[in-house]
Length: 185
Image (cartoon, rainbow, N blue to C red):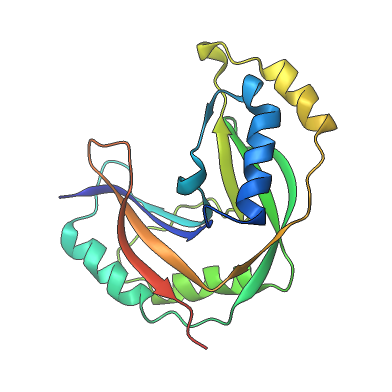
C-alpha cells in the first residue's frame, strides 16, 4: 500500500476540556462552516510529509516510523488561543506554543527524518482543523467570517505527552494510524 501523504499529529482526547471547547466552537460556527470533523478524530497538526505525484512506499513509511520512535521531548503545554482561517479553506482552532515545546518537537522530528522524505514546505502553527467551508457547496462564508469576529475562545490547555504517525493510502480519503509515539524525557 502506498501513501499519498504522511502526517505527524498530536491526538486530542475525545473527552475533556479541549474536546468540549472544540465541540462548542463547532456548534457555534457549524451552521456556516460546512463539513466539520468528528469529536474523536481531531488532532493538532504537527507536520505533513508529502511529495505530490510521488507516493511513499510502505518501506519509506516504515523508515519514517522507525525514525520517529527516536524523537525525545519533554511534555509541554498548548493553550487554545483563537479560531481563524488557515489557508483558503480550513477553519482552525489555533493553539499558543506557551514555552516553545511545539517548535522543539517539530525541529526534533525534522532532524530524524530519513533522506528523501519531503516535509511540506508550509510550516504550520499548532492547530486543529475544525471545519472545511466551501462556497461552491453553499456554505455562507460571509456569515462565517462575521461569526468569527464575535467568537469567544475559552483558553483551555492540553499537555502534550506523545504524538501519532498516520498515512493516507493512495486513493483513499481517511488516514490510517501507523504508530503512536510517547515522549521520552
